[in-house]
Length: 250
Image (tube, rainbow, N blue to C red):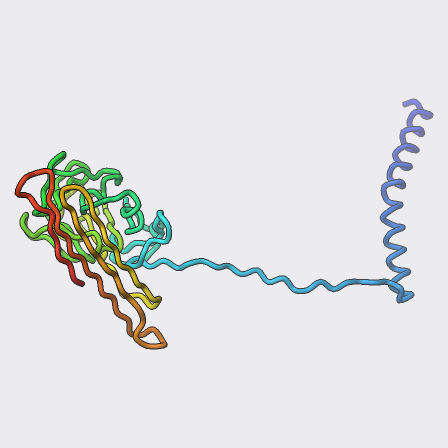
């Protein structure tokens, strides 16, 4: 080994280390001197508290936005959808109002796996649906059977808070059901926040409709509350002698 070259490399390394450590040592010494002399000035910053604000969603309440986060259809308990090991779709009242759905079947028109039994026709006697290719003969309302036969009539959208679809053989949770799945409608519930809504509609085929929705707490603690939902509609359809009239009071 060439001794002069080795000494030169060692000297260069020592100088680099000293250059890097010198500013740190100087700063530490300077801070120590100022602290000992009492001339140091320090500013105490105020405490910063970070809080989270969000709207809590319930399985029977309105959907906050478009994508629901909780459901009770898959397990009959109020749990997050992400923790439910079933295929579930939830359509909130705000969503099916936004795309102008006029009946129960139309409200599920954009839901995967759902089709109408009477495609292209109007059936005002029941909600004729197919889930994953299997006909659904019995729909559910708040977890209980709503239709026992094909002449029980359709469910009125204005009285619903959300519509939930449970796909696949998990429908056995509700007993003898379609292997394709079940459709469970959730009714509107009383709220503790004041709600005052009146709507007037008019459209094709002499459609005339008026609806109202009122809800509020009855006491200061919110233990008791009420909700009154009403609808009256006179309307024809593009098929003669097939009206779309409805009277609703909940």
